[in-house]
Image (cartoon, rainbow, N blue to C red; front, side, top):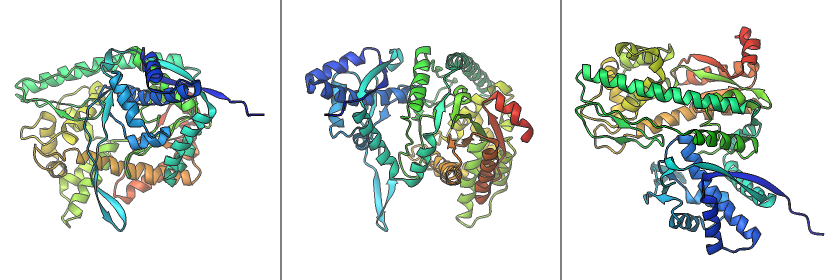
Length: 488
C-alpha cells in the first residue's frame, strides 16, 4: 500500500495580489497538475519572499542581489533564470540588469579573489506603496525536506557553519507577549523617526553657524553608498517612514521562520559576516528570544566597531615597520574606555538623546563615505584629533575622490569583526558545548556561567590583537536581571 502523503503549511510574505498573478503564470507557463503546480508555486513564492524579506529587514526598496547559482542549489531547480524572467515579464519584479564576474588568481591550487563580483539585482516595483501580506501554501513534506536538505548541503560544506547551525536549531521566539512587543516596536519606531528629524535639523543649524558647505551622503538602508551633489545649503534627506503593516509583516515573518525551524545560517563569501534571521531582528524582540527555552543574556562591547578598526590602523604602520603614531594609540585608548563618541558630541554640543543618530552619522561621514576634497564638520573634528588614523582610512579608500575602492575599508572592517567575533569567539564557545549566537559584534548566551566564559573568550580574543575591550551585559529578561545582577 503506497505511503500516504503528509503536508506542512508554509507561509510566504509578498505584496497583495501577487499570489493570484503567480497562479496565472503557472497556468500559462507550466504543467497544471496539482503537485506540479504547487511545486512551481513554491519556487516562485520562495523568490518573491526572499526579495520581500530583504526589503523588510533592510527597510528599503533597494535592489536585492540574487546569486542564481546559490538559488538553484536551494530550490533544487535548474531554471531559476526562467523563473526570474517570468516574474519580470509579469511586472512582479524589476532588475537593475547589472552584473559583474568576480576576479581571482590561483595560489597553491586555491582561489584568491582579487575583485568582488555582483549578481543581478531585483526589487519589487513601487514597494513602499504596496501592502505586504502572508500567503500560506500546503506543501508536501517531501518537497520541504528536499529544500531543507539543499540548504544543509551548502552549510555542511563549512564545518564551523554546520556547528553554528546546530546552535541556531535550539533557538525559538516566545510568542506569548508578541502583540505588546509589536506595539512597542511601532511606538519606538515613531519615536526614532522624530529623533532622526530633530537630529538632522540640529546638524543643519550647526553647519550654518559654522559656515560649512555640506556634502551629504545618503546611505539607503540597503547599504549602497550614493554621494549627493555639493550644495551651498545643508541637504536634509527625507526620513524613511516604515508603515505599520510592513513592521508587522517583518516581525511575523522572522518569528515564523525561526519557530518553524526554517532558520539557516549563511556566509555569502569566505571571511564575511555570518547572517541568519536573528541578524536583523528588532531589538525589542530580543527579550523574547530563547536558547533551549531560556532567555538570552547579551555581551555588548563598548565602541566595538571603532575599537575593532584600531587593529587595522595599527597594522598599517607595523606592517611597514613604522612606529605607531601617538594619535593612533590615543584613538584605541578612547575606544577601550568607551568615550570615543563622547568627545565629538561634546565638541558639537549634541544632546545625549542624539547619541544613536550621531553614531550612524559618524560612520556615514567618516568611515564609509568617499574621499572628498571638501570635508564635513564631523570629518574636520576627526582629522584634527586623529590625523594619522584618517591617513590610514584615506589610503584604504583609494586616497582620492574618484576611487572606486572607497568601500574597501568597510569590507576589511567587517572581515576583522567576523574573524574575531565569529571565527574566534563564537566558534570557540560552540566547541566548548556552549549554545550561543552572535549578532555581528555581540554574543548571546542563556545563563550566567556561559556569560562569564564568553566574556573571558572575548577578552582573550581581543587581547591577541592588542585590544582591551570593555564589556557590558545586556539583559532582555527582567526576571533574569533581578535574579542574577548580584553575580556581576
